[in-house]
Amino acid sequence: MTRIALLNTANDLSPAQWAQLARGNDPFLSREFLGLAESTGAASADLAWQPVHVVLQAADESPRAFLPLYLRQHSFGDFSRDWQWDQAWQSAGLAYYPKLVSAIPFTPSPGPRCVLAQGAPESTRDELIAAAIHVAQELKASSWQCLFVQESDRAALENAGMLLRGGVQFHWKNRNYADFDDFLATFTAMKRKKLNRERRYVSDAGLRLATLHGDEIDAASWQAIYRQYADTFRRYGNHPAFSLEFFQQLAAQIGRAMVVFVAYQGDDLVASAICYRSDTTLFGRHWGADIECPGLHFELCYYRGIAYAIEHGLRTFEPGAQGEHKLARGFEPVMTWGSYWIANPRMRHSVAQFIAREAAATEQYQLEMSTHLPFRLES
Image 1: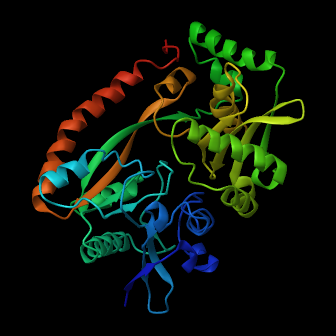
Image 2: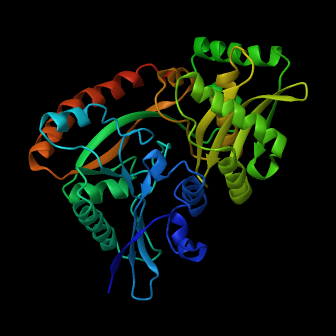
Image 3: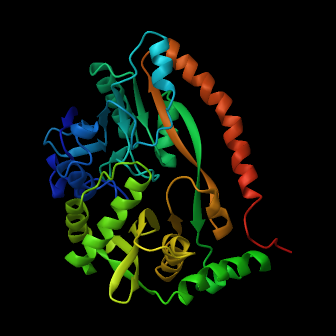
């Protein structure tokens, strides 16, 4: 017999129970990342990320399936792109918040959402989706949004009758390149020349570049890296949700699954790009710098990551949301997917119409972006 359990934190599952879940080594859907985000305040009720994670439990209380789930009072940090939906609900005399969101806080990276225990039948995924809808109904949420889903989840969510909504991100794909120069050889001569010029700006500035893993970063370096991360957010009027404590503890716990590209000016760490990795993918997340240097952002956030992915045999580099400027650096437009359960039938119809109108424009945007890639045409 299976029962539904709601967790107040990802830490309510023990490390042994997390080990039973087939998560594909995703660095974000982990006890370490979610648990620390929750315990250090990034994913907490104070920032409208109230954990209500869904677990399907067997009779012996072992997890059969897990779904990250947060009760939200606003949309900051979930990248749901529902900017005007609150107003639409209000116009209909309804409350949009609270809503439920299955996503990684402040992390728009596609990954597993409906996570099954190893060996569990695929039908368990359907049970988990039904459980989430039941929880949404019990909590009187306006909607349940399952965001940045992988293909297996996408198919199951669509079969459950949820609305699918596409988006576009820019990802780099490793086509068995021997090294960075091998990758660059696929560019047109003009695009290759421009990229090399950007890299020369950094080398001519006399900066020393390095790659540090989580288990190689000392306290003084973390002070600099965190200051740069926080300053970037504050410069644009945003809140730096993750604390210094979060990064330091996470680095100690996940070690080489955290990758930070840094630049030194003399002995001073003056710029950094925080990334994470799985067995197959590098994920770019945060950037900051104490100095102005042409090309430094592209070097640390893109070129060093591409070189790292090639060296370590990673298949994909996902540098984060947005950024058409990534096209010229060899990142390709790919579709991302979210799914939506809407409680009110009238609002569900309105959202379905909105998504249908948006879909054609999204598809056209992806096609248009594909025409701006820097690669040579195959003869």
